[in-house]
Image (cartoon, rainbow, N blue to C red):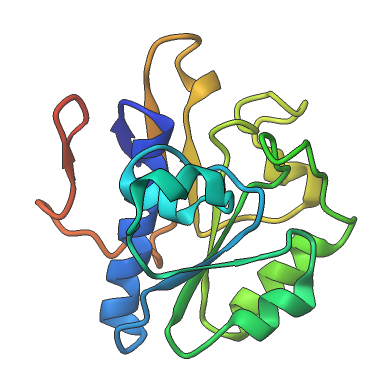
Length: 186
């Protein structure tokens, strides 16, 4: 767990964990598949991850390494996966994209795809986490667990705070790999 000061910083840390994991365990894989209409934050990296071109246009060129597919489309996700893919990052329920709820088995199928292909599953729960969907985490509604999760908004009750969490097998960070002015070092 790394405590930070915003949702964008929590997502950014999640991306960094996944990319380092790919470098160490997946022959340099670094690309992350995200969904169109997603929103992942306002740092340059999270803007690039966001699947809404209007956020990216004024900041071109944005960092590379992200592929966007339609939300709730498993076949598109599978087709976008390459040897350079290290992770899939989704919001369990899209918020800014128009409150899009996945089909009943979509997230389970994504989890299975990740497991079968040695990919990390990242859930951006900045908007959906901490009771906002009726469960502690949004992914619990779908009986799926991520390898990495980003949290914010509901975490601080109005105080600017965020966090990203990684399961032990996914956490590739060593001391000094990540830091934040108000979040310390990890």
